[in-house]
Length: 85
Image 1 (cartoon, rainbow, N blue to C red):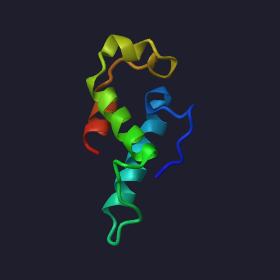
Image 2: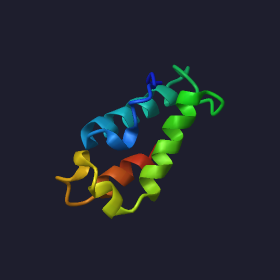
Image 3: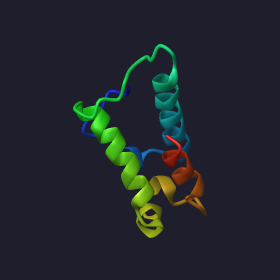
C-alpha cells in the first residue's frame, strides 16, 4: 500500500491521481497470491479506508471548495471510483 505521511490525504489529490491510487490498491489486493492485505490495525491502511469513506460521504459543496476539484462539474466519477474499491 502507499506510504502515508502527514501530508498525503486522498481528498487533496487530483481526480486522476486519486483514481489511479484506488485502482492500484484494488489490483494489489485482488491478485492471487495477494501482494498485501489491508489490515485495519495498520495506521496507513486505516487512513486510506477512512479517506475513501469520507470522500463518499462528503457534501459536493465541501469537496468543490478544494482546489483539486474546483474544475470538475460533477463528482460522480470520484464517488464511483471510491465506492468500487
